[in-house]
Length: 71
Image (tube, helix red, strand yellow):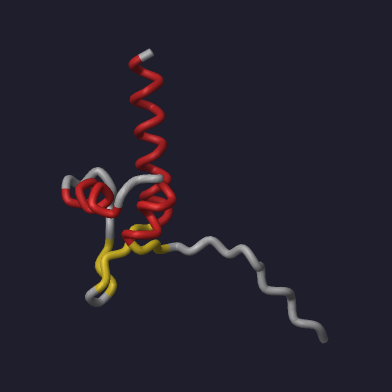
């Protein structure tokens, strides 16, 4: 009775501000600005601010859409 192997490269559902900034290749302060303006949605988990991976992906898709419309 072997247990199924746990996926080694699990993608987290929630990212810290620092992790989200690193994934976008921007500074932590820039990430906080995006959160503050509402451009990137975040959630509060206790005292911690977290960014859902899906919200980060939506932000990138919106950026891609705006670039395509400009050309």
